[in-house]
Image 1 (cartoon, rainbow, N blue to C red):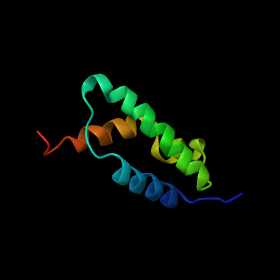
Image 2 (cartoon, rainbow, N blue to C red; image 1 turned 90 degrees about the horizontal axis):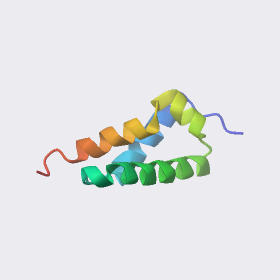
Image 3 (cartoon, helix red, strand yellow; image 1 turned 45 degrees about the vertical axis):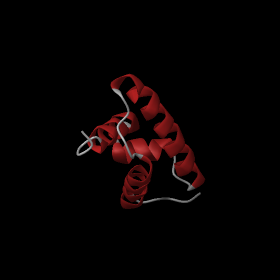
Image 4 (cartoon, one colour; image 1 turned 90 degrees about the vertical axis):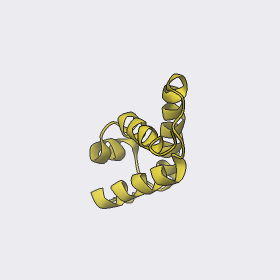
Length: 78
């Protein structure tokens, strides 16, 4: 079992989000998009040996994090 440091987990999640969160979905689709992104992120993290529990421990609620990233993606697109 690989043990990842908090910095490694934070870097992984931050890089992943910057690569995958490109545009803000409409408010109606926001929850669906966050669910899709969260599922993909946790799958990619597991493939790298990072558990969902590790992500939560370091980043907090991943749905909240990804929602914020989706909302930030809309800056400059209006």
